[in-house]
Amino acid sequence: MRHDEPTGDEPPVWRPVLREDLAAIDAIGAQLHPLLTERPEIFAEKCRLFPEGCMALADAAGIAGYGICHPWMLNDIPPLDSFLVALPRDADCIFIHDVAVLPRARGRKAAHAYVEHVAKLARERGLGLLALTSVNGTGPLWESFGFTIAGEASLAEKLKSYGDGAIYLVRKLV
Image 1 (cartoon, rainbow, N blue to C red):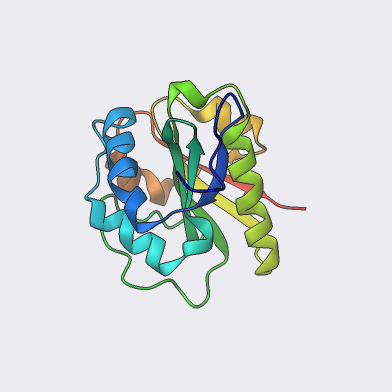
Image 2 (tube, rainbow, N blue to C red):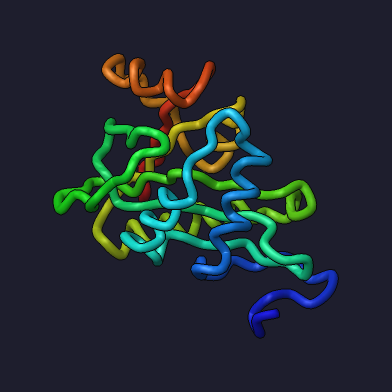
């Protein structure tokens, strides 16, 4: 066990993703998003391109969740299970690719803490927006974090690959 991981009933903690976390992240993604699975290499690339935005949620039992984000362009949804190759030089937002928290770690505001970490990263880079694609009916959760639906008609085709009911949301940072 790493020295910064909880040892008992302590709440889970966010820490940077390590290479050895990728198998657990892949398993959590497959468990929580079985219809939206991505190859482990996709997560590995995002962690390589923007390590400060890729976090593992650790508790006494191991990895209990993860958050993956990266700088991107507003109103442009990265295709699922596709490599980014590079981050855009003229990024105008941080795109939250995925936040997944196992049931054992829910109810402790872990997702909220990750979103605030992402907001801090955006502000440090002079970016005033966060964006994401909500799936599996999680829109109300994201709205509780200050995100609002962005109704770009041009996104409809890209949203289809994220499943029925997927919506694109944006949060303006102040």
